[in-house]
Amino acid sequence: MAQGIRAFMKATRRLSIVLVWAVSLGATLAAGLAAAPQGQDLDAARALYDRGVMLKAAELARGFGTADGHALAAQATLVAAVYQTPGRPARRLLRQAADDARAALAIDPDHLQAHLRLVVALGYIAEANPIDAHFAGLAHEGKALLDRALALAPDSAWAHGLLGVWHLRIVRHAGPMLAESLYAASLEQGRAHCEEAANLAPEILAVRFGCAIALLEADPRRYTEEALETLDTVARLPAEDAAAQLIRADARHRLDAIRSGAREGSGEVLGGGRH
Image (cartoon, rainbow, N blue to C red):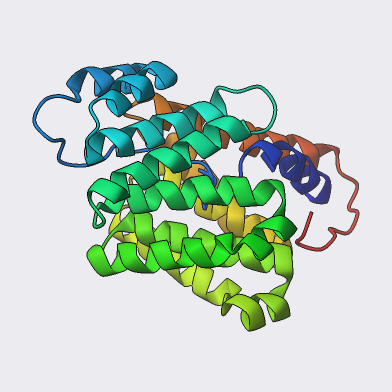
């Protein structure tokens, strides 16, 4: 199993939910569309998104100049950055997604989806260089966005899931003591928010996927079996659009990596939770 986890960790370099995600999806990594479009203007952009034509969807949605349009552009650009760019997520696209989310918030400061998309974009940007992210205050900015999202929608599975991933990623990078002293973050809070997200909306693949990866990376000794069960569930859930199909396929790939490594392993001791 230890060799399988190491294979898994190597595979996760492309996806940081917390998501987001991030995660996730995340765990980064993120799916789902902004709710309640302004009229029918975004129908064509949404159709492109559903088909997986992410950058064209983003360009079209962005052009409407509305809060919903910019939020959808951020969402589509994030998916393109994480899943449709070879190698690690494209920084240029991540910054574009952050700009789109900020543009939505400039129009509507209470736009829930824009808060969440900005958190995901900042999380991916921070994962590339956690030290620079610390001094730039990205973790604190992300936490403030998530606190506002939960104030706007206390029962949002996305907000709970991303906040769970936020806690788990901070613990992974800083260690439990620094995470607590610098950010008031903890593994226990992360796990609790992820559980709440799963209770609120068990069908959302991206949230459960991002939480499983973040939990496994934060403390693989304690949470391997729990994370594997969640990934197995994600791999079996229905996927209603192109982004969800990408996440489900990723969950299956990661499960295969762990299981194949476990079959080849020879009982070596698993190292710490930070990789």
